[in-house]
Image: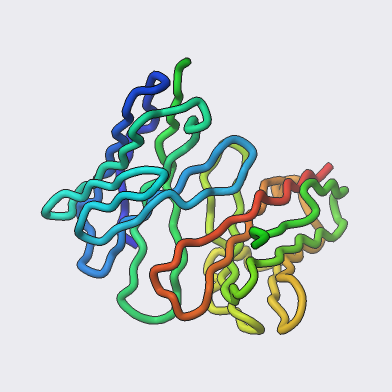
Length: 113
Length: 115
């Protein structure tokens, strides 16, 4: 699986937007960009995914660079419950039936009240 | 629709005992993944199963660990003769068949402590 690079940690204030960056310069044409987060003492939780176009859902927005070598997860108004480790993951659909996710170290997001 | 259920939530075993971790996937999901998270480390893939078949076990330790997902019942991750280094959180995830883009749904894990 292609690798991603994320900052180890970021800090935000409550009610402010948060932009979590991810670099994936070796992304292939069949890689989708997935974001998951893991709250303390819980399993990972799916946030959003995309291929080329920007995506929005009730949790977040995903902005994908035109060359697809980077992406940004946007939380529009951070809350204390958004404090978690955020993982940017490339998921390959080029063939076969192996759809596993390979987690890196992620970004630890701290939200200040 | 209930989420992925893992039990027990916490499991304590003495060195040399066996640990059995259970995972019931979401309704309609026939793909199961097991991950391990050692203290202060990231999530590591262990094994990917479909009903009655192991598809990818590239992350499973060669000895003492086994996994199954029978036609009926939950998926089981079995660790024989546990050692202290097996102490970790074990997470199970599931996804539906035939939907390549479907996200994985994770349970809240089983925390294994080996004393």
